[in-house]
Image (cartoon, rainbow, N blue to C red):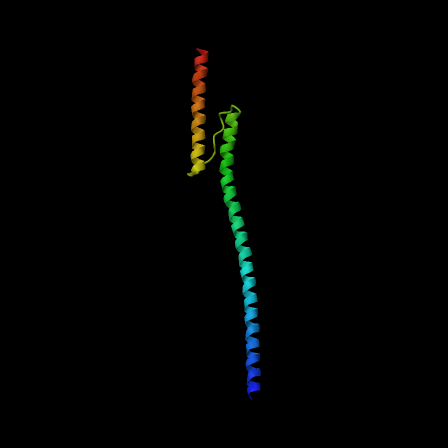
Length: 111
């Protein structure tokens, strides 16, 4: 009788261990999938942030490049209220000041 009870208990323990192993295996796969999805979402978010940052910087760079080529007609086309917007405003202010100064120099040269 004890042998029979021991074999029943042993079979139940084996069944419980098998079930626990299956649950653990499933949980590991779910964690791997969640990790991969999370990393993918972080990558997409980083890419989006980088693109949203690069676009205004390119707008400021176009104006600065034009100023370097003596073209004071190209404004920095950034309308944000962050640091890049502040730089764009400063570039536009410098461009306007240079235009005024050059107009005065041209007027003085004519005189």
